[in-house]
Image (tube, rainbow, N blue to C red):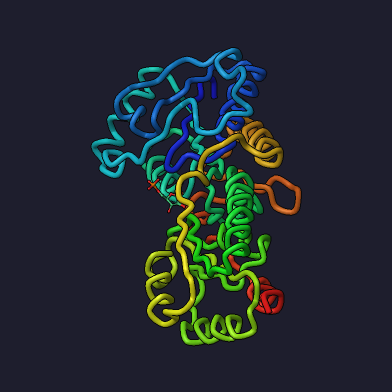
Length: 323
Ligand code: F6P
């Protein structure tokens, strides 16, 4: 490879900028020309592609969002859109791509690299952490720490008013933010898409806690839980426990922004560096991940299909510690 493109795609995640910086500077270090593709695959289709220099990525390691901007591109789902994108890359002579994003972005990259002769390397960048083949995804640590800080604040009010709080965190298909933030803040119950919740058991446990005047009661719900998120769960709880002072708080997009934590900056830097090395070594269609502190290369297709598994042990810990 001689000229590579880098893009960020799907939901933004804190640390994406640190990854872009690492790709650009590693590429330049190895004598490659590096191009930034704006707004994910949209920039590829619409030919919004700019040359990147070492200075283009100055002063961004600490910034949330993504200087390349991001999008969920519909045109790239069609063969015609992908053909356009390919032609634009070919015209510029781009012969390698680094895609920083989550499962949707990797699916796109996988299809594209099967159709055309441009190797694609994925870097897992998503606050959801729902990617297999890596212990970390860029943005998760920052997002979960934002959730923890926010839930700690809600706890103060829950305590002051003896209230029950239903708190919705992000994750329409994945419960990692809910699980980790719920455990770290001492939530009584955690509702996630990966597990069924016995609503009767939840109600009677809350009733029992109400009887013994347990000081703080917090239920953390992932956006995509089986009941349809925090407002549905709050409605059910209010209906069944009309005498309990219940409030709903939806944390929403504050979880996606902000300055990345040290961990997110570190993994972004390591993965960005490693993605360029992969292209130079002739690898293609793999995601770079970190497993047991080693770089791990997983086929893009496999990374999105197998996902990570939530361990039953964590669910047991939630139950035991919330009593
Ligand atoms: O994939 C990241 C994520 O923040 C999910 O947790 C959430 O369900 C979704 O994106 C929200 O997407 P949007 O910002 O497009 O509404």
